[in-house]
Amino acid sequence: MLKVLVLCTGNSCRSIMAEMLINDLSCGKYSAVSAGSQPAGYVHPKSIETLERHGIRVTQSSSQSWDAYIDEKFDYIITVCDEAAKESCPVFLGDGIKLHWSTPDPAKVVGTESQIEAAFDEAYNMLHSRVSKLIEGVIK
Image (cartoon, rainbow, N blue to C red; front, side):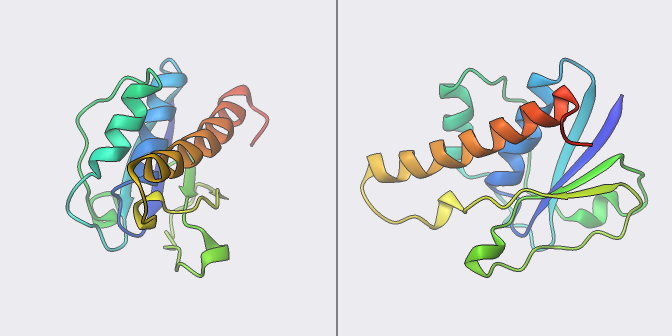
């Protein structure tokens, strides 16, 4: 089983969704956890709603610091911050293969309920596509 650490700054939306996608879609081939460099301390409810709406099995998760994993070895370390939006992505110094999946933060979207839901769906779709490629071995 390959171990994956998914990182972002707050560990409340994108990294949580990526963690759940990897664990659900990989059927045991991968084991993912997520963390943040400055954890928000909560999981955004829209992240969970979005995953459930798309049929992804949601397991217990929490917004946590990457310090919890500093001594663990990972095969992949994936950041999901959106560098185009000038977010600062955390840098984890572990030995795993490092991937960056720039994903806009849906929690920062302000608007109607349908606009916010669309932002979470966009992030979900981007992450789903990348996770599928990882599992298929297209990303190494």
